Length: 161
Picture 1 (cartoon, rainbow, N blue to C red):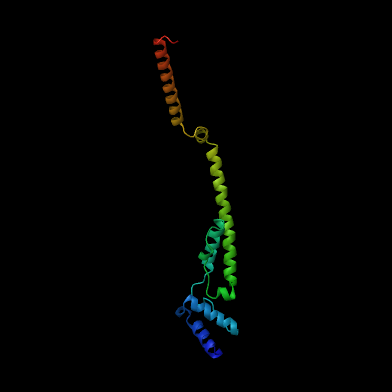
Picture 2 (picture 1 turned 135 degrees about the vertical axis):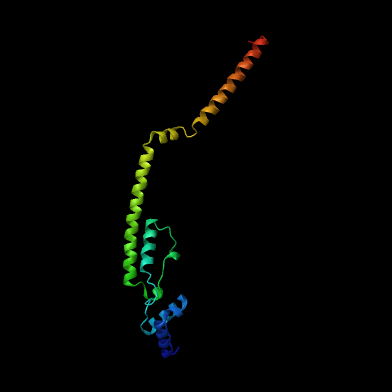
């Protein structure tokens, strides 16, 4: 490809990046890096720093359960890497995620401790079926007693015992 044509494409992108799709912007970034030309990343677009901060905070707070495909990426990031602002925002989000996750674990442990120290909770654990178990037990027992006494009475009538 003609270097003058590449420079004109890069100049058109730098003048109005909104007229390019993300895929086209990645291609322009690759062309700019190949000839060492200036590529302005998201100058006129919304910066991704705030989105990276929020994503990293949520991802670290949820112990990495968010898929990596959801991480916001700026134009040209796959070619040039993250900007300094994006790196700082991502690191700040990770620190906030650690703090939020730690606070959540602390509150959860306190709630579990309070729940376990509650005597009503423990009585439910000792007899998880509650009165249903007692009812079944007494029902089976009375049925057994009734059958036993009925059997005994019948045997007495026949003079077997």
